[in-house]
Length: 77
Image (cartoon, rainbow, N blue to C red; front, side, top):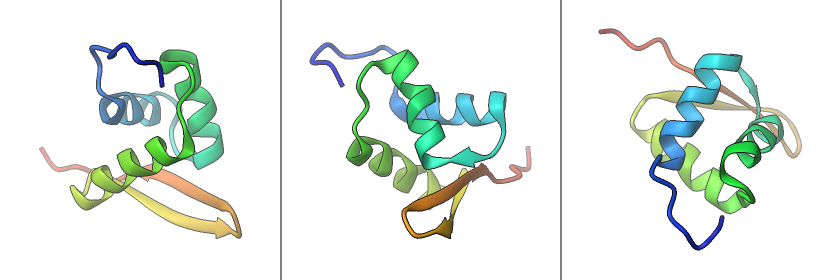
């Protein structure tokens, strides 16, 4: 990421991207976020995914070695 802060947090961008595009792999999600945020490292993406998974917003499941599926959970409002 660049040294200048983005007014939109990475976690919000992750949720918005998944709402727009649906379930995707972590690599595809990182490519989508690079368009908005510039260079998003895999470590930053993992931190954002972990926070959202602990909050119950999304689910990350393993597809195969080195590839994970990221999807939003059904939130009750």
